[in-house]
Length: 302
View 1 (cartoon, rainbow, N blue to C red):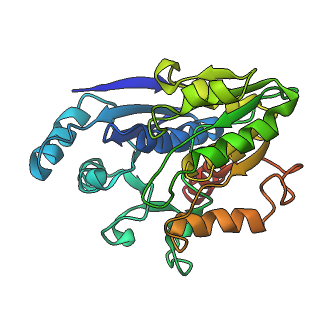
View 2 (cartoon, rainbow, N blue to C red):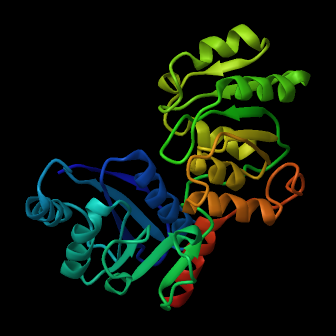
């Protein structure tokens, strides 16, 4: 059995229980934790994580989920993200009479789940269903910090199925934007290996944070208080996290390989809404999608 107690909110009433089923992918677990933490900010709730052994085939994975879940308090909600978790999610929720919450557009009918929360760009038409919630991007754990904002940050991704890579253009934009000094730079797992070396050669005065050297939670903490953040267009999840942090957000354009891709549609919708620097986003409220979705669920089940 694997898992950890992650939160406790004291209350005179018995707290409701959330069990998160994780496929071990940081991005998926981050989404689930984002929703669980938002629910716990609004109600007496405890939540814990059960990490599935994804190397197992389907039925042994479901059995593991059922067996290991017995080591946790009986859940009222079971949350999961990632296609490999969906059937385990349904089975565990049914076993305990809990409400299942899936955080993506599933490959099986959405009506099978208690709630489905999925990015609006995943749908060509608004989905039907009282318990389907569309969000601006994937949910995340970033919450704006109180007080004055400070810090300026570049977040660098890398080539993907949807975006190519133009290092010369990227370095030029960073040189232009960082002219006033005081900037930090963080890369990611997809960033080409020589980028930081080339960056240091061409742009001086930057504080570099290689992703291998940053601890879990470092980025969320930075984004929560940063004054200004620029993110490469390919790093869609980091764009939504930056928008959730409450600072000014700019997008560093990268070559588009699939202009019709759903994530591109989502970014263009954000631009149209005036979310980015240069499109009206210099003075905007932070996204709070995890809190909004949590409120919908909790209000519906009072």
